[in-house]
Amino acid sequence: MANETVTITDNSTGKSIDLPIKSGTHGPRVIDIAKLQSELGMFTFDPGFMSTAACESGITFIDGDKGVLLYRGYPIEQLAEHSDFMETCYLLWYGRLPTADEKQKFDGIISHHTMVHEGLHNFYNGFRRDAHPMAITVGVVGALSAFYHDSLDIWNDRHREISAHRLIAKMPTIAAGAYRFSRGEPFAYPKNKLKYAENFLHMMFSFPTEEYQVNKVAAEALDLIFLLHADHEQNASTATVRLAGSSQANPFACMSAGVGALWGPAHGGANEAVIKMLQHIGDVKHVDKAVERAKDKNDTFRLMGFGHRVYKNYDPRAKIIRKACMDVLKELKVSDPLFDIAMKLEEIALKDPYFIEKKLYPNVDFYSGIILRAIGIPTSMFTVIFVIGRTIGWISQWNEMMTEKNLKIGRPRQLYTGPAIRDYEPVEKRK
Ligand code: CMC
Image (cartoon, rainbow, N blue to C red; front, top):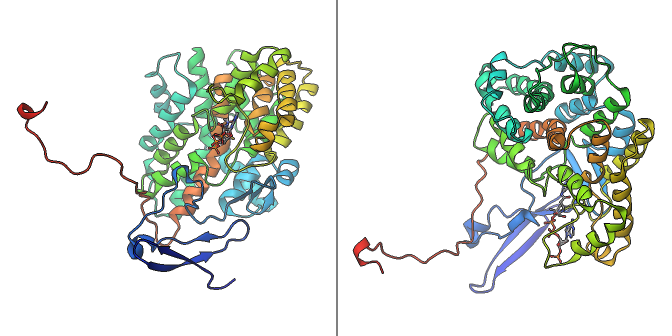
């Protein structure tokens, strides 16, 4: 509806202002509060951004109540069934699905950017062997800005595109390098004839001494995992990338900030935390106890892979991954006791009034770890796999922001609760 407004009145002064309401394609309307400070002298207070739309975006849409996720308008279920990760990258970056020619060309461009500068290999040697692969990834991704500064003009469309191609292409190489370094094994160079996920598996597990056959089931499962993680609107890591980018920092530095934000167990680190939790539970017979602990307010334990800030329904990605998990375990003839524990946990939690009332459902991380285990990915690499998938989302969101007409540096304010103004006391007078 045109010219809708909300009136805000400061009851202490009686002053009122009308704030415009804006509508998007889907989703709740938003109140444009930009003038609140200049006209009423007040800020809004919303820790955790519970009610705040931080930007306008045309990339990804989530309806958390209905469990809907759209990339550029396409439902995630349709993309998971008919598309692949490379095509999804094209869709997220360029805003539309590619023609057959465009798709082939894009696949070619990405595979020709997969190698990293030789000097970057030396960078790994500065880490301890027992460093977490995420620690290495944060550092190496940031270091890319020291190696690829020929295309760092953030105001140049073509430079941004080249940086995006490089990031999508090099992330699996960087990730596999982190794993190989931790094992004391030689880095495997990428092979251009392989598809994206196949190439990653080759770089993770092949040896120069032997022929390596990529397992097709594993590669397809991995491609699906990348696709399902590709973007998720303004989550913590994407918001971090945008905030870093708003200062006009280079894209590699922004991505490194995103990797750091993803690492925490409340966000991308949850996939690793789920497996650790299932291992800790140890047996189906201990599941009830784990659920009781998760409900206990005096216990910090939470069911990892459960709950979501936006989804108050089954996460649509979790539905797809759950089914894929069953298929992969069957096809690879893997029997994983952790899968039985996960199924039991889900069954009990979904019937429990605590989880029902709080609308806590399994999220994308609940089953992804079990597939990753089945295809031989070590637990410490799970969040790095998330990084590979999410890179396209981060860089597309960054690019969208960089092409805004009036890009403003992100600068939140605060409700100050520290000491009131006071005079400095010389040290001899302090008690
Ligand atoms: N187990 C037990 N209780 C939970 C859980 C859980 N996993 N998640 C939320 N709750 C409870 C929480 O204690 C709170 O109860 P109360 O209202 O009585 O204080 C209520 O549900 C709301 O939780 P919240 O922490 O205020 O909700 P949030 O939107 O700030 O947090 C979340 C969302 C994902 C951080 C949280 O659900 C969580 O910690 N889940 C486990 C970690 C996880 O699986 N993270 C992956 C998220 S999906 C992928 C991604 O984003 O990377």
